[in-house]
Length: 296
Image (tube, rainbow, N blue to C red):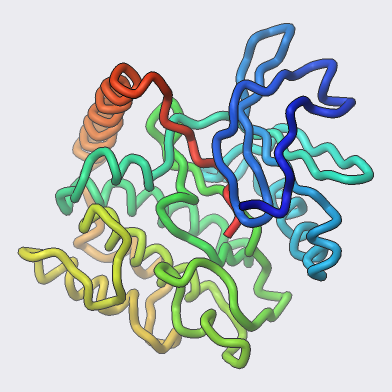
């Protein structure tokens, strides 16, 4: 159930250019559609947010931050590309590039990944988050559903609904509980820093290794190497001061990999997923949605 009601057709100025193909995802505050350009037949993802429910819940500043950060960072490596922002009296429309899948659906189709495969995705996520952290941006809701995979097999960070900057000095509850650190689970806690995202990155790696939603920091697969076990223990520390920065994580030897090996592992995983998606499509008569920009 979303606070943004479903649309049967798009209002102007979108109606003259785009048609709705299908719903890709429904979140607490937003609905995401696949839309098609009636002239070029190109397809895109369109995130639709109804303003009034956000206004009633005093969440318009949060919405404004999301739009602003996406506009500023749409060309940042590993961040989903925002192509157009349209504001009407009742809605906000965000048109994005359409991605193939999300890490959530990749994990669901693939099952538990090997350490090399999971680290391949984790590495890309860290590269993207380092770019954002270098600019003072904190995502605050990192999880497999918010990492998309584009048609080139590249990871794209999406859904900036909880994002802020370090200068905002925000506190309180935010994010998704299974992937969020202790400081975001209470209204009375420390100011949020980039260390919130370090925890989310680790919980995402947990998910990929387990093939499911992690049930706390100690929920780890059997047979995990000591290097990755120790890495996750540091990244999932309850005290944010004890977590390394993303830059520190990328410098660790267990994260390093030859460029040739990295490219091979990423493309192999990507085409494995495409084969499974095709099988799913044939058997179910549908296409797995890309999962872009789901709120909450």
